[in-house]
Length: 473
Image (cartoon, rainbow, N blue to C red; front, side):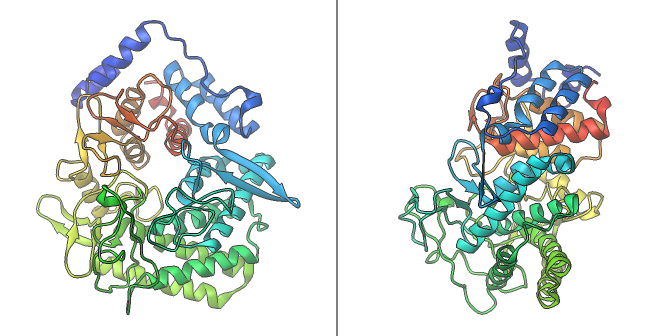
């Protein structure tokens, strides 16, 4: 089926497609937009080889061009690798913000793990990031973003919270402590290398457990609070900076979402699912590597408690879709029914290994997320996908949501749709963006957002490995 006919059937033959057709009908060459080799922050021979393989095998020149631009974007532009007394140390910025998010940095290098066994240089780079992330967690487990310079003072220094030099932002998000575990666990499984998991790393795991336990808020609000003087309500917390009250359930409170927006109700369900997986992974590691059975038992005990709390509280009855997973709850019976474009979100749960893709409740939830029952699902002339309040306006779709949809899809037609929408909405720039307008992809936010670029490359590489016929359809 021709792409235009396919999109027309999906109700999306649109400004996005026509914009792309008009742009490239004028004879634009698909020249690489990567920095010159001598100006790249970090180089990987195995990643470069994958790019050349993709370009040689995929007939769609525009798609090959996008892969070449996007997949190495983290390495090309955001990785700063050094060695301290022979020990690797890696700082990874998010793109147009000179700060390292624990979430983003983990997700940015994640697609490269598949190449570690044949690329020692790449392996050392990831080990260096694991090392730096452990130091960040030890500096402040509640912070979400850090500077390379431990003495640098943040633009957010006036936030009413316990800010320290070297911290860019201090928004407490469960996933900030989960992503480093995900990266560490899968690095270990891919390589068998235990060198990054020293006493410092183990201390970071212990502090993660302590922080998660405190934020169950069984007897009090805990030590974390946050307020900011802002006109944007999702950038601050009510109730003296602790957020709205919760009734203890065994779940962990997250003051902010992965989008860095404040939660409405602090029991953020997707992040608790992520924590469940991360706690089990950390337990396996400390038992196998450090032979610390008591710590492993404590991590598993918290995982079991979160698991039971999710089973008891996370599933709600929707009048149209039946049993689905809630997005946020407060333990008092209040429920926030929505999904946000970021990862973790409800749509991306199987991608993180949190639920099975064929789980019946997840499939119901997926239908809800990709419908007008989700207040942040937008369908326009250019594309359909999930947004959120982060960019401050409606009708802005995040490519991350379309990529998450594709990564968790079991349908060839749906995967093709996701690829087509992403291909048709880069606005001629050759890169993904944070968000774009559902009717006009030339209206977008963040021209340099490395996570979106690299995970788009991850999506294309996965399809290339598993269903290459979809790329040449």
